[in-house]
Length: 333
Image 1 (cartoon, rainbow, N blue to C red):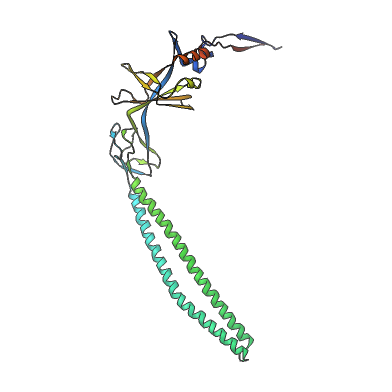
Image 2 (image 1 turned 45 degrees about the vertical axis):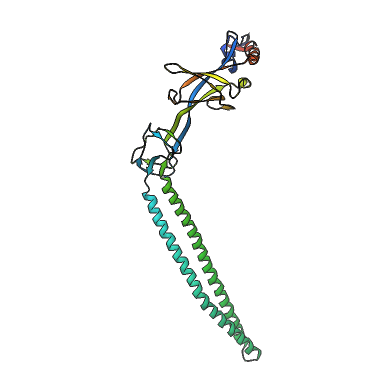
């Protein structure tokens, strides 16, 4: 027989002494000598990080700069082979030329046939009018009149069909010409795109290409980062958002040897939860002309609170006690 006992154990755990009961906000608060500060974990990011994607398919024929090289805006980076594109351009130019010739012939044929068709139609009309007069005077039979009318109608039908066919053929050639010109324009654009230039200044990184390597369209070729200035990004718990502001002074301690610290002002606060940080984001921009600060370096951002904010934080996040109910279930066979 299975006996099941349920034991409810209520544990009163204060938020101050129990890590599992601490809110995210409390974990970011430090109280020392009655002074309360906010301490945030942070990370260094370059002011610019730009991935270079190949705009076309092709084979690398030239590499102008290597990993770690300084890059200026509009510097040449790579050249992609344009042989196949140039062959396409020659083919398209020839096809455009042939379509124009066909259009010229259609226009000439239409002009020539118009004169001959007009003559045939005029003759058929004259013949019909003659038979109508003769029939009225009793010199032409009903059969001859019907034949003249049938001949005239057939002449009109042939004339209309021929004109429609010529116009239809001309329209098709005009559409084909427009399409070939669009393809030609695109091919010339691909020639220009095959010369890869930098859109930013910084340093070239993550370039693993060699001359002769094949690259697919939209494939990553390298990246450019600029660390002349950097951005320190720190994660902020939403509950602490009311206590900080843009322009507020902070101290940043970088985890580096030898130790390095700076004082700066908050550049921007992003009050939307970042999926990577799982927090709001506090940004601080810094000059980095000595290149001490590098991409990915970790840091600790300390934000001092004024007296009014310290009292509020102390009341709602530190002094307030919380109770946690833990339910323990025991199953005895």
